[in-house]
Image (cartoon, rainbow, N blue to C red):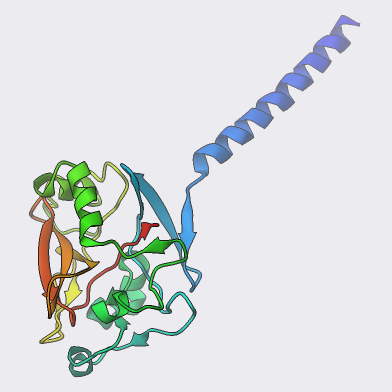
Length: 230
């Protein structure tokens, strides 16, 4: 009789252990995400009071499903007055998955919206909130950049990625010459804030510096996009 009771107790213990182990594994593997209109799924991360995408935007459509112009020709890009995207070095196969697309500001500013529902392109002030929370422009870059040199060129100064933002060096497309620059060395991201008649504020991070640069650039440039939650 005692053997039967012990067997029952052992069986209950095994099933209970498996149940809690399964629950624990599911909890640890859970990663919050957001999905864009193309079906691309992005990891997200909360830093301070803000929630950001932890990956660069890849969408080829506006929120309502309208296609964004895909422009590879340099001369055509430099004269655009409407939204467009491309991939650095016009190499979608190599660069889309990790680095996302490069968008001109006309796409960023389009009323049809680049960002998924419930998200938006960060303003200059929202970028400032992020960098201030991380210790200011001189220190925030290291905390935001992906660690190591898998994507960043050496030395990738002081990169810790301590908050999971995982900034990558997706390069940029210059508006005037429409050439590609800095792939592997610098990542640049749009804000939604106009700096004047021709310029828009952006943020960039470099392989050789632990800070974040704030600058105003032509609306013809092609930069990466990160979205922040409404």
